[in-house]
Length: 436
Image 1 (cartoon, one colour):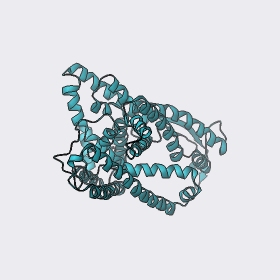
Image 2: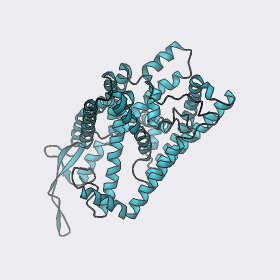
Image 3: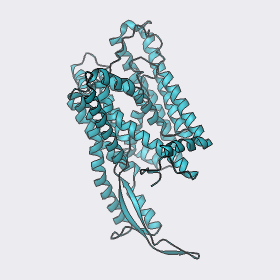
Image 4: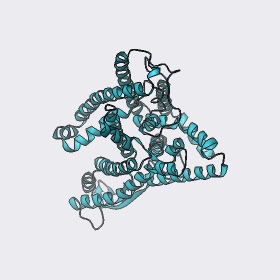
C-alpha cells in the first residue's frame, strides 16, 4: 500500500503528467455537466424518463451517455454517431480504392480521412437526432412545450452540435490529456451509473440477502480478473539476432521475443459491434407503422434477447479479426526483423516469416475473440438468472469490457510517463505492458 501511495505522489511531482491529468478531469467534468442540460422546448419536470434502465437498446444507449438519453440532454446521442462513421470509413478503407489511396498518403491522407469522418458524423447525427425527436414525441409528448416543427428543428441542431462538441472534447483529451479521449468519454458515462446500479442490487435486487450479494460481487471480481488476464496475455515468439560488428562494438547475438497479444484489438471491437447494432433500431424509429421494421427494432432493441446476443457475439468476433488485421501487420514485422538481422529459429526471413507470424496471430486471436464475445453476452445470462437489469449491464457485457480496457490503456500511459522519468512506475508488481 505504501508503494501505491508513493506512485500517486510521483505522478503529482511530474509537472507535465499533473497538467495532463487535471486537463483530462476538467474536460470530463464539462461533459458530465452537459449531460444534465435539457434540450430546448422540453420541460424536465414533465418529462417521463424512467430512472430504471429499460429492457431495450435505449437503456443501453442511456448507459453509454451517462443518463443523458433518458433526461433528453443536449448530449443525448453522445459520441456514438462519430464511432459509427469511423467504423464505416475503416470498412471502406478495406474495399474502396479511394480510401485505400488516402491511407497510403501518410499524414495528409489521415487528415483527409478525419475531415470526411467529421462531415459524416454531422450527417449521421442529424439523422439520429430526427429519430430521437420522433421517439421523444411518441413517449413524452406532454413534456414538449413548443411547436412540434420547432422542436424537430431545434433538437436536430442542438443534438448535432452536442455530438460535435463531445467529439472535440475527445480529440482534445487524446492530444493534451491522458488516455484515449473517445473511450474515456464513454467510460465516464458508464461509471456514473455504477453506484446507483450497485445500490439497487444490494437493497432490492437480492431481496436483502447479503450472502447472495457477496457471491455476486466475488463473481464480478473474478470476471474482471479474467478480462485483465486475457487483455494482458501475449504469445511470445523467439527472435534470434545475428552478431554484427559496428565500429569496435559487437552488436546482436542475443535472443529476444516478439509479443503477439491475445487481444490486440483492445476495446474497439466491442464499441464497433455495439454501434452497428444501434443502426437497425434507429432506422425502426422512422417507420413506427411498419410491422417489418418494428419487428427488426424489437429483435435488435432487446439487449437481453437471444438474437441480440447472437448477433452481438458474431460481430465482436468479426471486428476482433478485422481490427487486428488493421493494427498488426505481419509483413512489416518480418521486414523489420530482416532489416535488423533478426530471424525466427527454423523460419526463413521474409515471406515465410510473415506467413508464420500471420498464422500464429490468426490462431491466438480466436480464443481472445471468443472470450470477448462470451463476456459481452454475460448480461443476457445474468438477467435470465434473476439479476437486476441495471446491475447485469456491469456484470459483464460492453460496459465491463470498456471500463477494464480503457482503465488498462490509461494506466499504461501513466506508467510510460513515470518510467521515462526513472520512477518505478505506477505499479511495482504485476505485468504492465508499458514495463514489458
